[in-house]
Length: 399
Image (cartoon, rainbow, N blue to C red; front, side):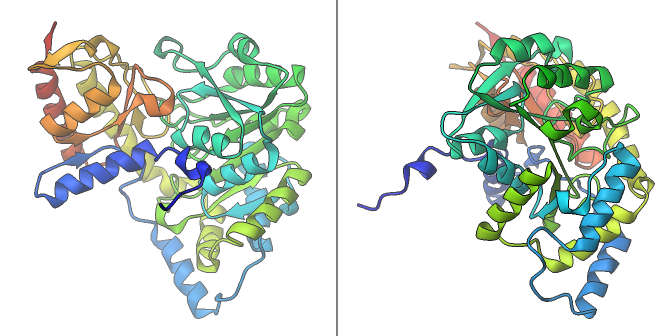
């Protein structure tokens, strides 16, 4: 009998990837499935970034880069962080990785020991939970509510804190809720960190450029907790570079050094051509991608209006990213013939089968009353999807 390690047996498949796989399987069977499950911009990478990659090939960037990334890219990232975020980092405090996901994994694996607790305000991005488990840590989920725009408070952080707490992880703009933490919201997390100097905050800012509410705030800008914050960012969402796989951390020196050591044994450096493309992106004024943000804002308005008309959907107004995360618990207990919709998994499977629209259950994000819908799709598909979802929900009957 072939046996796998307990480590991989305990690891759950990413719910977003699983739902995307199911929708592809149905498409392969000839069904007209609209997949709103993946968080991937439907735009192409800007031309000037592509041209930089082509030039890099012609210029011979075909050898192993330094493990933490080319020096000029790390210097440019440090300059960007100062320019846009009022963060002071040297190039040596930057580690470039194959996407923000690897950046997050590096940090967790370098800091979390067996039995350490990690606070995860829910909803959280699906991979946080599983990477913490992989590192031997204990994910501690802090429920939040749509009434508070899914934002964690100081009181909630203190309630779930223990002498085993080592880290807190959050994203802003948030995947999956679209919530954006303003200066006051971040103040709650900062106050918590000031009381607990042992705790490190991992601030995931990958959706920084997709912000409809104005200024982006970074937690590490608070000088009192600078040494307790790791900032994660990248190029996938803001520059439509998902397939290029490039993310980075800015961190206290000892954490950056540890992540370089970890990465050296797993993947080594990010692809050389990707790094040259990333250099062009990071040096550009953020306004070069404003057309994408404008398009997302237009889609947000249309999708939000449609979702609010669906019976049983409670919808807030996301201020960033490209997701809606409606509370659909009012639908639980409804019946589709003889089958009962008991939770978000049941509802998503029902909508996939009945409406041929792929969404992601909220359970995967630690919020079982919700479902996630990505509006990073064409307006035509979004309008069609809302129409189908509405019709499918209207077919349900209450017990």
